Length: 438
Ligand SMILES: *Cc1c(COP(=O)(O)O)cnc(C)c1O
Image 1 (cartoon, helix red, strand yellow):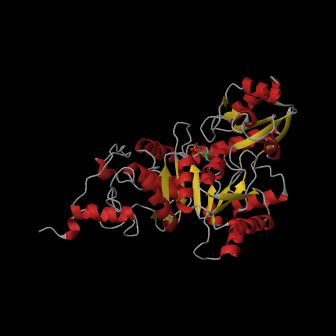
Image 2: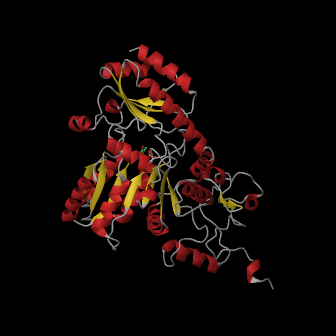
Image 3: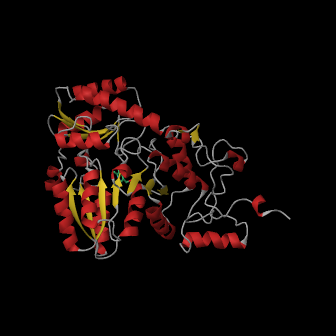
């Protein structure tokens, strides 16, 4: 008779792809994320010694026994708290997705992370988890255009309303907006995006958290604070430390980092993620195994890429702002007000590598500059290894009404730039010749 303990462990919370515990510290020294990215969450010995995780292209997983299958389904359906203990069906979980999730969570010390088929599907799944008809969403403004459409037009069809405050709002302004929201219905969520795109204005997450606690205490109907951390995370901004409950990502950007995949993420406490996971299980917004594998590959170089891009951006912005054809450079490293400088000091570890360049002139000058670029590519998106430049007024924000464009300073002379990991002086040479072409 074999002893119970000889059998593979399928009853605990440890997934079966780990035969031994991860090494998380050495001699009392907790290992850094950049080290953990090389092995955390994957045991090669469970996959023929393969150094890199194989891509598990399967739609379903074989159970050890009928009892194990029952136990897994109890976890998946929420009959027993704690989620699935093993792999069940690829709409719920998979080895590649779980490795990506374990590693993603490390950067922000999140209890749990989930991956999604895109940034928007992550955001949609989180919203559907917490919002019901009659509810109100309080949000910072502006938001990523598709997020505004989702909250305003799509959830609006289901009787959800919203009220917003400008990204840079003071605690008193945020407080007044929450008051207004409470008069409209149950406040289901406070949704933030920082820095706002393309204005680069930071949200005071700590202030939002204090206002939320003043209004809702620790009661049952305390709305979660959700924040889109795509622009600065996971390296330069850790909003879970400043009072946010859930961080959402377009992993298509810095985390994927090579402009070759589309993915999304959500990170937070186990309690919140259990609810989000149940919605993901139901609607099937999980990331596919191949993209999850590519994401794991990308996370190995995340710190290298982001640090290099950040250093490049600092050097380039410092050069750009002194050029005679440049009106101004809106970059987090050059805060425009004392309040923004204060939020930056309290919340950020770096200024990122995406900024707005205002040229002297209008659309004609901006287009001449963009068309003359030889290294930087003319494309929307950000956070890739290559430098990209675009024209928000004529591209990403084309359909924004003129008045709102004006309020957001999305003018015809504005160019949006995401700096990559090329040589900084080569990029400066490119920008210099493009400025000369105006
Ligand atoms: C790109 C982006 C999204 C949407 O992500 P997808 O991966 O394209 O779905 C959401 N928020 C921000 C801030 C983004 O830049």
